[in-house]
Image (tube, rainbow, N blue to C red; front, side):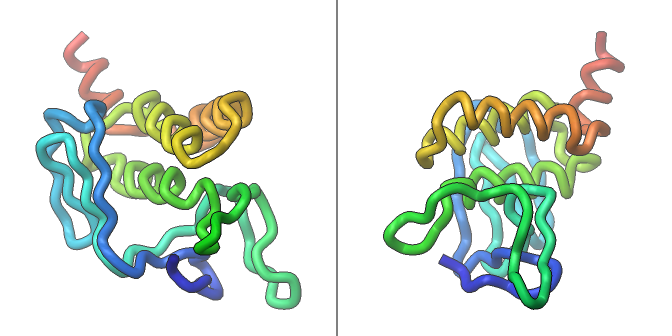
Length: 146
């Protein structure tokens, strides 16, 4: 696992992360931080993100905010990969043609895969769907083609 990153970012990838999903098929995207091709996302080594939001770093207390779940034997919290994938999709939402609902679904799926109770994962996904970014390119493209 990455070491905690003091200040604005809670995590930083120690190596590239590979994630495959049918929800990414047909999407082609490439920049220095992430690539999506053939249904696979590759997030570059060194990418930094804040985990589940909102979360704030308080110098005396450390990180406080939305829990990232229990940690495994390597110290990786359950929401580590879900928050990583969702953060990439949100950060580049005006460039990646993915919908808000697809990004929330992937978030929920990864939370469950990594140990969140399905009802808690559904709650987290609902919160990001309604309180997270709303202006995804995929939604804009869908409404143009409707």
